[in-house]
Length: 512
Image (cartoon, rainbow, N blue to C red; front, side, top):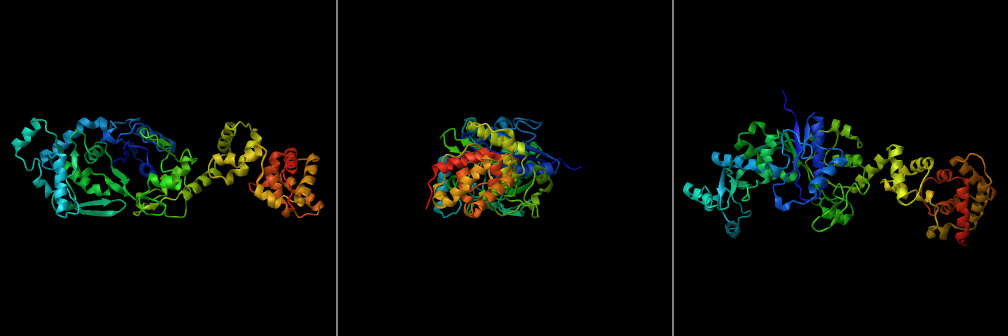
């Protein structure tokens, strides 16, 4: 019988959640759903010195906004809790001691000064990467070089110590990554990583392996930055006797800067003017504010669709997917090995596509909220017509109001650059006559009628309509560009259009 698929997203509460982390969470979620399994979240807060207040709540709110909430988490615990590593602290030592007992780990009593002296000595000897490893540990102060009595005495005196893994010398460590295939590393390149710190807290390497095992994690889908640590984790599974239940690994490609040179960072977003966090974030220590995709007007489903394609593709030409369709199409094997350039223009494109197909009542809600915030009440029938008119022209929900505010609130100022070129005697002649026509018109008024009346007016005046159309738009909207003008006229009605024309005629100066 196949084992239930269980995957986890394991962020550290050290600040705002980077979109690279959000993508990792999304891929875990999609894989779990595709395989009929479960998506868990574990807070990896073993490094208390880097803990940032509010970061955990930020992670929770980000995932909830995107609709990819885990089925087990600190806020919705299942049977494998606790789901914060700091709350699991008492059990890690027993696993570290088990490795010591088996000869796969050892106590190290070296002081920070002694470690620094070792690094300086190796650097002077032109060692490219000074490490505490199978060679250097023989010259250091640890339970491999001290007698059992000396180790016992140091423990009894309360001398600080760490527990390090004992990496074998010159052994090939193999890992079959779901994305990258076989990864092979010689153990001589690895160092004896600390597993238990002197404060009694485990490092990521120990806690991560123990927790994944106890939580029955079957697949570890995580960022490429953890690939160098994977051989160490393979050894730990072997040393614990858990090799048969070791999860399958998949190391995701990096999210790169827009130019492809290096990993995407917050600094890149600040410099180029786009967010790299899902939500707004204020650093509780510095007060520094960072913008988020949500607050900038990105829709969660559009943002998810965009994120999914940062490293994965469905194997065909499709680009637009609902979350259900993403689940159906997703496979880890179709995730690329190479880093993916971050393209904010593509994120905006996705948002535009999703806005175009949003139900009109949802778009109207965005429009009404922004209109009300500026003190305007818009009738329901006009709201629907306005939203339908501009929805194909907007990138963000706030643009619905920005692009159509002129319909609700008549302009009091006009684009002077357009006026200086287009507000001539012919325009004034046509507009004056058109206002009279509209004021005397009593029949049904729609876009077609508005256009027919304008065309007939221009023809009567002996002026080609094309020569004055931009001036007509200027008179009614205040600018030289915008949505379909005749549709605007239909929404405004004859008397309002005529009123605006009269105001423009009394305000603007005719150019020679």
